[in-house]
Image 1 (cartoon, rainbow, N blue to C red):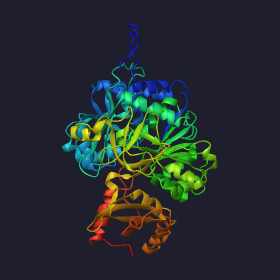
Image 2 (image 1 turned 60 degrees about the horizontal axis):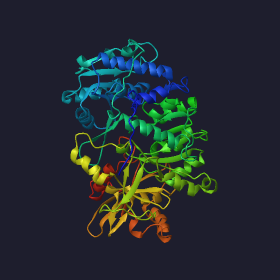
Image 3 (image 1 turned 90 degrees about the vertical axis):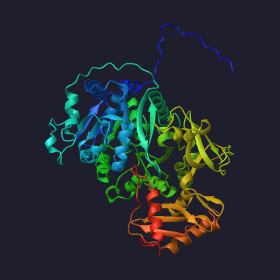
Length: 575
């Protein structure tokens, strides 16, 4: 195809999309708005910019001059936010380390990413001491401590609560002490916008964690997409996340860049509040002090908000919440709406930075929708974000119709998707088979473009020649008033290929038997909502369901627990 290009002026500026542009914009609009870390630190955007420049000087003095990977092992904090900018803006790569992984997995990610510098909160020093003998790449360590934040105390290694610090000779100082010695002036240079800015690791059901990576260009475009989707361009796709928003970030920074909102909130100069390590007590304290108007989290966090006695009299009517990470049930969405929380969902994955889809309520339809219909549209994946292409393919790679019924794997294209897995060429080719990124999620798309995720491919239950969605069964079981949480998994069956099994945590004080629940589900069979073969073979009750490192229900662990119960190595609680 022919195109036309015109030679530019010899001195025309080739504007690279770099993360430094995001930070620079924070000084344009509301630079006096503040960023809070728990109740111990605050700064405005002038001070954030100063501290980012000081951090850049620290890196330069440590001979970290570009192209190196820096691991950050900290809670959500002002320090981590500064690292989101200073590290990539100096041409280095920020590795956000998931401290909820096992020691072996953390060790693997540090070595595999080739971290040369580690910035680590003192709480994780004992963990680092445990794995230090097997770390092959770390040359220098900066220690973070909350004890000398904003109060002038000097961090002392003698205060570390363990003996025999194997890496003491690698520690170059305390974060705050190092920063305060440096100049607040620094000229961040231009460079190639395709330089890698961040990396982190996603875990699967088997094998080692896989490293995804994102460039400056990708993260700037992702930030602009967040601005378009959530900043008010669409009337009901998440309600005006703007500079007056009080944003309480509860999604860990290590979880897909905190869903990208630290970058977006900084660009527009919003009020930001970070809780450190989450607890319901911390949330209560921060909610009462800051009155957040927007927060993010997985469904289990929302469940805590709604069920805790500490929040029983809270007025949530001015708070919006974006749910991601795992499926939000209609029951939980209705409970949130009844408490006044404007609840919506987003869909994405580690490989997509994460923005792919978001809930959307047409502004006219929303006025006439009853609560049940609203809950439906607030819990499905929704519509693809700006610049995101999606389609559904069958097992042969052929497109399936957008009729809301035909299911298949959802594949996608967008400007900010990881281009592969770091040092994993075969898995990278599988991820990008046929030029589309394969999500591993089973979904439908209706005639209006709304995406509904049915399941993960690995969690779809193939019983009697039919595909049964574990998520669909979970949604129906969760409608029972006694059910707090539920997970459904498929296990091999000689006759049917696979059969569903359920594990349930009950609401506090509730009683529920297997027979009562199966009778409850029979009503959905009678109405044609599900087929009789979707009723779980066995139902097990536990006080709580195991969670992954990012707060999702851990189906891998549940599968092991259920198998143990079936073969009699555990206690069968289904009666």
